[in-house]
Image (cartoon, rainbow, N blue to C red; front, top):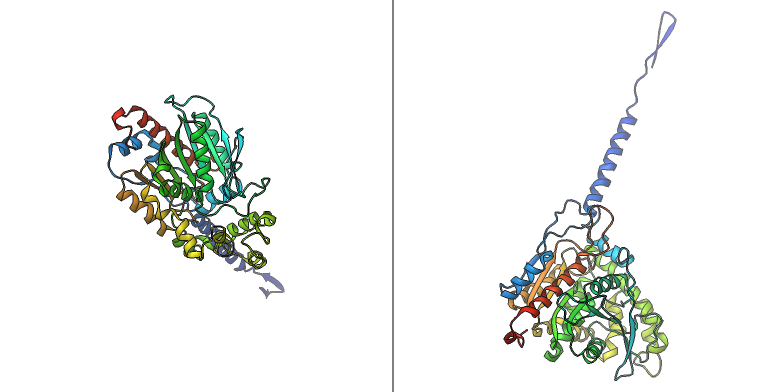
Length: 423
């Protein structure tokens, strides 16, 4: 503002208010971004030991004492490890850090319906600590196989601990293996896993078995053991990680946007479509149960439920989606499992709704052979550990499974001969 006095102009500069207002807006924006980051990364969430549900028995006390990682604090990477989404995304995109490349032999097993099951066999890198012959029989997650990074990491760790590993390749999952019948893997079909286990028992008559299942594989192994008690012969224990237990109860949660579950549903459906379409020549045609209309509906499917309704349930002749989910879920068989059973889930798993976790918790409260471990963090098959940013090559999950198996082998080794008939 200018004023005139005695012929001179006096200029008084008035400081503008706008820059200060902009600074305030910047601070508010930064604060908002930081708040979103803290919320999304769940940085304020504490770390804790897993919540363990079990009955107080001599065996369970021994297992928890001999596998201390189950009762110690699980510490994920500080900057991102408390986000179940980032744990899941890192597992899904990258698999693992510094993944090993174990060398195995691929085995082909003809099935009665004309299908050909395949699995990869990896020999141990040294003697087991007990001196016994022990084999891990492993069932991967949906559409997975022995070449996935998380499987390779676990196999490499197990080999170093003296375990032979047999890894099922889900029927149709390997891109370079053609189907020999109009059928591929489903949510709960145990035929291929049973064939692999039968082969291992026949070829290694003195080996003990450790049964391991990841995600969908957890459903298959628990269903396999519960379908017939003879399937539990020579099995020392079973470990299931991140399964949902009941497809029927899970289907409704997969349509919800809570925890972005509907988005994950879309991504998994897209992956399933790619697997199915890669075997289009074997699955669709006049000699199959699939029609051209099914193929058209498959192209437009945006959820696993639509694919299950259109394609998957028909492989075994189920009349409805409800019947398919009922008969292929382990929830109806798992109570028949009598061998020691460790069920592991994560509270921030975006694929497994919290309501489904009442199934393993109730089972552990009722059955002495079951331990249910629920971590606060870990996502879906993530369970990365690390200080700040870069995770360790081995995950908490890898260490827990092998630690529990080691404890179980030690228990079997030291118990009296009179108890050998009781698992």
